[in-house]
Structures are given as C-alpha cells and as structure tokens.
Length: 106
View 1 (cartoon, rainbow, N blue to C red):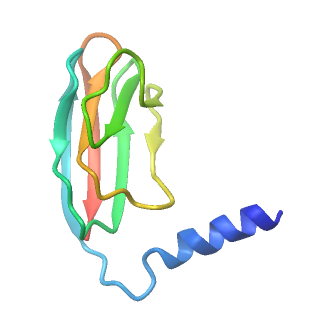
View 2: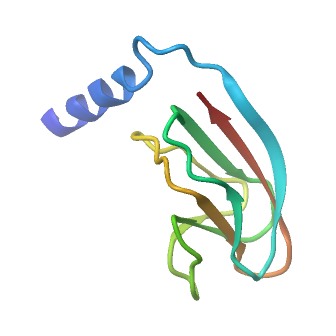
View 3: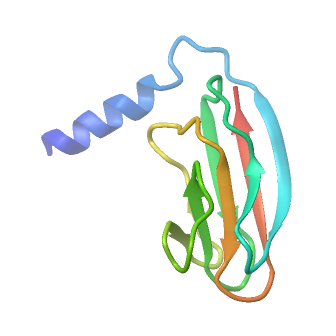
C-alpha cells in the first residue's frame, strides 16, 4: 500500500509546477528493424506510446534493441511511464509492420 501511494505521489508530481504542452503527436511505422523515432530530449515531461497495430511492438531506450529485448507493448496496448525518460526512443515490430502513435510533451 505504501509503495502504491508513493508511486501515485510521484506520478502526480512529475508534471506539477511545469507548463505541459504537446510537443508532438505522430504515427510511426514499426518494422522488423529497430528504428530511432524520437531523439534524446532533456526537456521531455511526458511520453505516451500506443501500439495501434495487430502484433507486439518493442520499445527500447537509448539504443537499438536486438531480438525481443525491450519493453513489449501488445496490440492495442500502450506504455505511459511514471517517470518520463529523456533518452532516445527506438521501436521495432515483432512481426510485419505495426502503427505506433507517440505523444510527447514538454
């Protein structure tokens, strides 16, 4: 219970006192090759990645992923980290091509 409360407190204070505005909202195509879609940004305050495809998409921070390593987002799922990473973002489809929407805020 204490951990959950702490996580809620952290997530609520991440944007507190900052001016949050949409930096970008774009749809990318994930393929079988790991591709950088967003550059490193120390000013990033918010990140939401949604898999709009029909198979798993793999996210990796700061470097190209190999195999199935990374954060796996199922079809129709999303990843919204509690602590926003400032590293570059790489995406890769487990199979075929998958549409991925990325909302980034400053």
